[in-house]
Length: 73
Image (cartoon, rainbow, N blue to C red; front, side, top):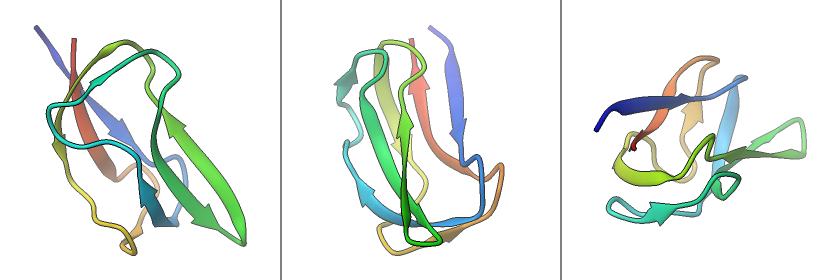
């Protein structure tokens, strides 16, 4: 089992967290919805796995390349 860090692609605000720690996700599932310049930016699972940890909260401002959550497969 290996852990993968899911990072923000841009500076944004965390609008909604769609998963909880321990959830099983499939490739393509929405994990987090970011908001930047009035646009919603979905962050999706790159592969099937388990959400190990969430490093952000709703309403938080994140920087580009900031770790949002950790998924193991």
